[in-house]
Length: 180
Image (tube, rainbow, N blue to C red; front, top):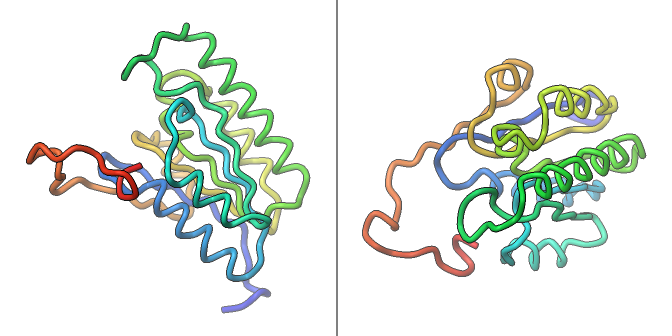
């Protein structure tokens, strides 16, 4: 276990349970312990203000975060045309490509990329091109429900979050600091 054993890894957090972004952020905190530079790009999310965004500010200068989504597509008060969401995703893919190519970041987190692919905002080809661009000493984490089979097969680590029990089932709504 050491620097000489570093290999570029592709990590996928998926499943219907909560905790995918949280797991990625946990890895982010671990990497900061080694003073790594990290870039986090959030797809789909965008219209809501999450506590994680405030928390990420506290992790600067090690973490650079970008929320490129236009909000949840087709649900929860979304009135935007699909093409607006698609254009935001295109910009996110280009931004990710630039950040990977810069070589500055040891860890690149593409949050909710699986959802963006499932919705048709990001194509398989675009996602594969980002994965293929990762350098020798860079790691990539992809989160979101519905990781496609091809991605799971390509990944070095896949963790599926499975919901066993949720407070919403008892009528308890999402809570600040816990859920958002």
